[in-house]
Length: 63
Image (tube, rainbow, N blue to C red; front, side, top):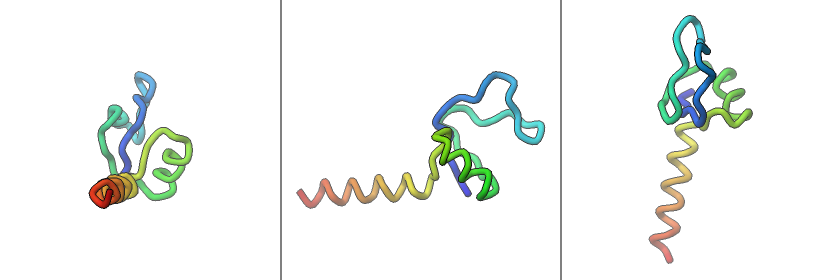
């Protein structure tokens, strides 16, 4: 699952020995791990975010 980080992780935080992506960067993670981060508000699902933007744009064009 591809997610976009919404926050900067604490300095020195790592996942599997690699530093976390910075706020605004995207990363692919296993679905369960990514879903946990999304539920915690730490990240957003990139696919869902794209869908929201498309819908918003389409709605604004209709008005």
